[in-house]
Image (cartoon, rainbow, N blue to C red; front, side, top):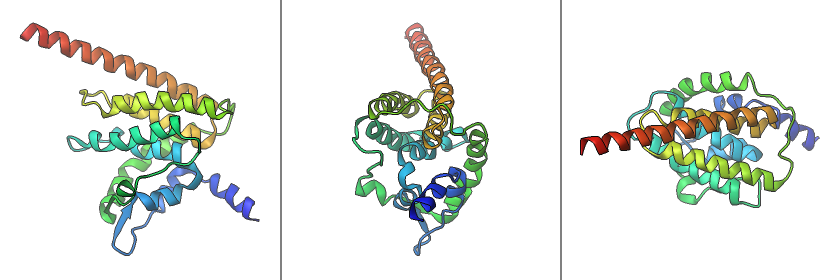
Length: 205
């Protein structure tokens, strides 16, 4: 019975789990609550949680705040021997006001459900921890690109991480391929922006 309940829980959409997040007695939602809600989906789900907000308009500097957890998660995905994420106590205690969390989810969930529409279990080929670590290394590169203050350079890598993260949670091999291709395009475009900016600065100075 417990196994069937766990399987049913894992079969739920990530957007449904996030939509059910509620503030604690202090009126806030913490990363610890999020970690407990996501359970064994930690790696892929946390990639999605911190990548998708980059697809909606955010205040200046928000990508730096979101980029640090992305780097931490991708690094653990690459280096950890386990399938669950570990959050340092200081980060686990980070929380936001329940109203602000609800407002953010109102913006994020439509994007998440749009991506979920094309993700389903199929053709899963990452069957070893080594292959998952390779994917983690690739996710780390994309997370670093998201973190870097490149003008208009964080949208595509964030979309790639969102697709990859959902594909990991749903075991969708085709989704991994699509997300990886989007990621390659994102890295190339970010590189071109940096080169163009460098060339422009060289001409000016």
